[in-house]
Length: 176
Image 1 (cartoon, one colour):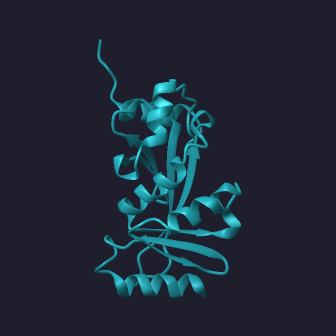
Image 2: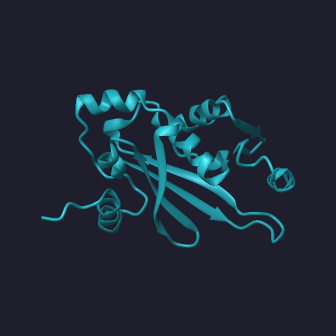
Image 3: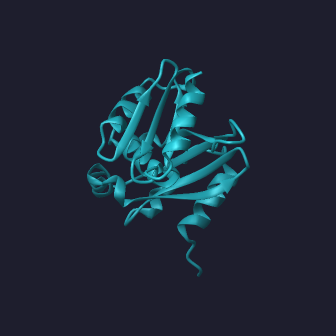
């Protein structure tokens, strides 16, 4: 019998269920304990589906890859200006069984390391907890953060070190 890889399982789940929505998972108490202790550096953001306007990613946690279908990060890609890179706007879905463990903040931080920066309009937030997530991400080491009147913008300082001109252009664009 062939054992399916994590990516194969997630791809099947993605096709069978609503795109971008986390699937139900049933972690053991030992797995919940491990999830509480996980660091963002232990997370791998892995693209499983790309539509052009969205990249759907699973969040693989080393040693807990089989739980990946319970954590989906959809990154919406919005072109803004021919001279500037696109905006990356995150939309996260975490199964109820693993909510409240601090995973969203860690997933956002891991996604920053992967994409370089993330942007979100305040008006696009469905869940109030996301205000807390953005505030927590803004205080993490290695993260630059700009809070505008209508948006949040966070970036990985290391990833964006040599792209200061582009970074300034993006922030000016979204401020207008």
